[in-house]
Length: 319
Ligand code: 13P
Ligand code: SF4
Image (cartoon, rainbow, N blue to C red):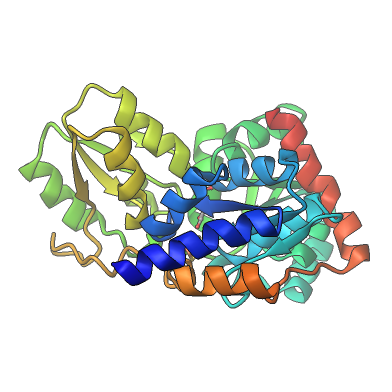
């Protein structure tokens, strides 16, 4: 504990000395989330992280999350230094959508508007017409559909399917998924719901279709936290990375939060629903990166220019 307090105070001092602000995702370690808030940074979903980094005046943005979040910050703020506790923190959606294969897929369907999830590399974004996150995907695709546009969607097939179903748009899906949300099981969730019939079921749309079907609320991490604060239910079954429980509990201390099952038998498992890449962000590497300035995010300037357009469209659409 004393060691932790020492690390935290060194991180505070280093942030100040470097004119740096800490932006963290809800799936990161609670210690990091707390520090981000206490030092004037933010804890947020991926859309809000992008917006915050873009608006803050600090010359260095430290992004605690996964690689695409750091790249997004750099694409939006080329003049700022963007650091991450580790550049190794990737995402199965990013890995599952290599830029060259994706470009071939786009070339085969030139009549379609290319919409990509934020969980992609800068190179994939550079090929897109629109970038979306889970909090705005539906609204953006709805608008494109109303204009008569056909969509090419990548990489998350579950979110893509959800968007297709809710908007009725013509959506061609890339076959990618999140290794964390993919593990939520309908069968176990059904059993759990029988045990807690009054619980509201909150689901992130990266989850499989059958799980999404059972949801009372489907949304981004911020939207799910909002639901816990605003719905009258006393109990909530939550199907997303369990890093989110820290903020949910803080915002609604009197509510009971139950992890959605990942094993298919109703059993929950603390380590299952936790992203291994988000878990790579710790106090030690956070301090080290702020003090040493290594693990800096760089994006090729040509790619950056191309990736900025669809990202800026998303920010303008959601402004
Ligand atoms: P949110 O945009 O809902 O925060 O989710 C992004 C994500 O998958 C982070 O892992
Ligand atoms: Fe990617 Fe899933 Fe991890 Fe989010 S939780 S970073 S979507 S692997």
